[in-house]
Length: 143
Image 1: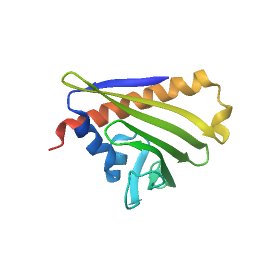
Image 2: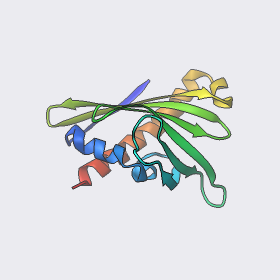
Image 3: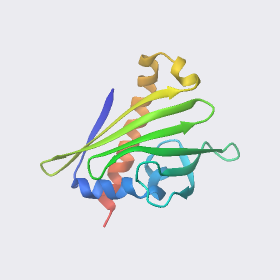
């Protein structure tokens, strides 16, 4: 299931936020701390090295770029130990006066794949709506 949001800026401005890996915990719900961003991010194969959770229970994780079409598409494989990994697809579609940003996400490996899809989606829709709201705020404030 795709969650989408209209953002009142051009795709290039939204892409600037996505393409700066250091912004990741500012808009992704659950990511709390960036440790490193591979040189060349968001090229395919590059990784974001981040933590999830709250101190003192931070878990070191990573997210890898699977596909990248600047200003159109960013597809990620987000590791979420111990639950496994998820595939996240972020699309940007130009619209009059802005951009339609969509996110689809599904469990790809680990125990999370055992959660029935309707339950996965119910939880992910809420998280991804908030992530898009944060991305919107960052893109509109970018100069």
